[in-house]
Image 1 (cartoon, helix red, strand yellow):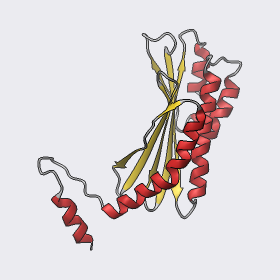
Image 2: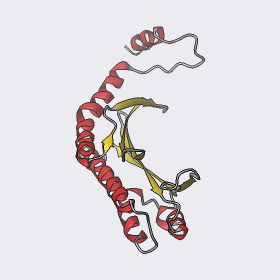
Image 3: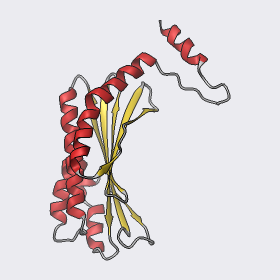
Image 4: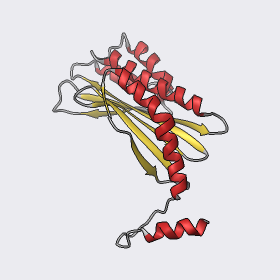
Length: 202
């Protein structure tokens, strides 16, 4: 049976390429069904209710891994640029949810507040990074937050993943709402309290 699918997939391979990845079509279909039928409706509902523009169609890709792993990506936009990107990875044994938040800050934002975010001890396990765009006055600074969390299916089931998806989307929307007018030293604690729900990583 194993040789059967391997042979069939090998026949479809492009011989002009230097590398070929063979995927078990049954496993691929199984994982895609979980992502599209179980988790995409949850994600779509949250994106739709956000009031922001979002990726209208689910995008599923394969991840380079020692096992077949499929990922579903989704994004939120403020009308001009993306401020949140999420990705749910699933294999037959485990899942992982990745979150990225892109915090744009204007040129006049207090640099001390920016340094406080970058050097925050509760984020040091996966520290945020800073980008400076000298051509953008409204988004002169951009701080990128990244986090990933997951587990084996035996530890947490589909309901837990659904709850994590909802929390990630809600928290990133709350971070964006809070930061629209910039981040000051006075309100940085409140902003970080919101962020810790997803991005805290000692």
